[in-house]
Amino acid sequence: MFSDDVAVRERVLGLLPLMLLASALDAAQAVQGIGLTALKRSGSILVYFVIGYGLLVPAAVPVARTWGITGLWVAMAVANALLVVLQGTGFHRHSARLVVAVATR
Image 1 (cartoon, rainbow, N blue to C red):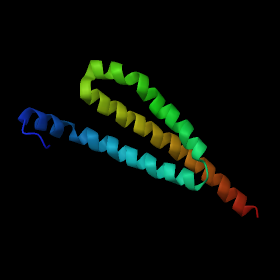
Image 2: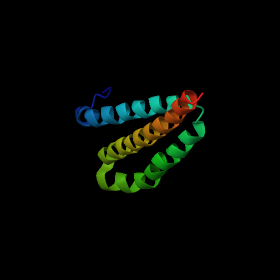
Image 3: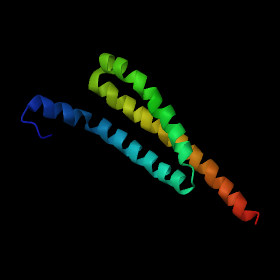
Image 4: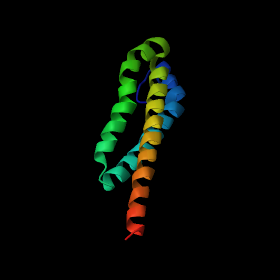
C-alpha cells in the first residue's frame, strides 16, 4: 500500500481479503485465549498454540515454495481457524465446569 510500485500495490490489494480473514480469525482466537486466561487455563492455551502453530511451522516452506505468499496467508488463516476451534472448545468445556461447580453449591 505504501509502495510506488503498481505491481506491488495490485498484489497487496488482491491479497487483502485473505489477509483480513486471517486477521479476523486471529482476533477471534485471541478473545477466546483471553477467556481461557480468565478461567486460569493458560496452560491449555500453550497446548493449543503448539498444535495450531506447530502444524504451521513445518508446512510454511513447502507451502511457500508451491503457492507463494498467497499460500502462506491461506496457511495462516487455517492455523488461526484451528486455534478458534481448539480454544473455543476449551473455553466452553472449562466454563461449563465452572457453571456446574457454582450450581452445586
